[in-house]
Length: 277
Image (cartoon, rainbow, N blue to C red; front, side, top):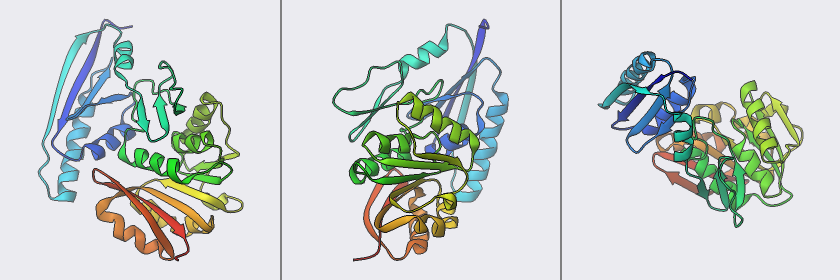
C-alpha cells in the first residue's frame, strides 16, 4: 500500500444521476455517492477525472440549456486503509421484499437477500432505475414464471427474480456484464437457465415477464425484439426512462396496457401488459 492516496470531493447542483452514470462508465475505480455529489479515492492523481467531469458538465449544459454548478476539490491524504473505511460506510438497502447487502454484512432473515459485493462502489440498487425495477419484480414476478432480463448488467434483477422462484434467462451485449452476472448469481447460489452475450433476439420461446433496465433510446430501438418475446398476457418491465422521454417510448409499445408507472426522481419505470383489455 502506498503512503498517500488522493481524494476528490465532487458537488453538483443538479442531474446527480446522470453524473453518476458518467462516473460509473468512466472510472477505473469505484466511488461513493453523497447527497450533493460524489467522493472518489485513488492512489493515482485524479486530474483527468476532474477534466472529464468539466467536459461532461459543459455537454450537459448545452443539451439541457441549464446552468449546472460543478465543484471539485482534490486532496492528497495519508493512506489509512481507506478501502476498509469505505466498506464500513456502506449500508444495506431494503427495496420491498428484497434486502441488498455486501457480503461483509449479515443477511436479513425476514427478507429475500441479494448479496452484491461492490468492491469500492456500491451503486447497484441505489440508482432509481434499478430500485424501481426491483419493486416491479417484487410485485409482478411469481414462482415458476419464465423471466428474461435484457441488458442484465450486474445481474441483480435476474438474481432477484431467481430468488423468488422464477426460471430466468439473461443477456447483455457486453461480455463483461455477462461475466459479472455469472459471478453474482454464483455469489447468491442461484443459477440462470441461460445466460448469453448478445441481444434478446437470440432468446428461444416466450416469457411471462421480460425486464429491460436500459435507456430510452435503446428501449425504442429494440422494441420489436422485446415485444416478440413476451407471452400473450405477459408483463414487460421497462426501466431506465427519463420522465421527459416516457411518451416517446410508449409510442413504440402500442397494444400494451399500462398496468403501473413507478416514478422516482426524474426517472420512470413502466409496467406493461401484452394486449389491451
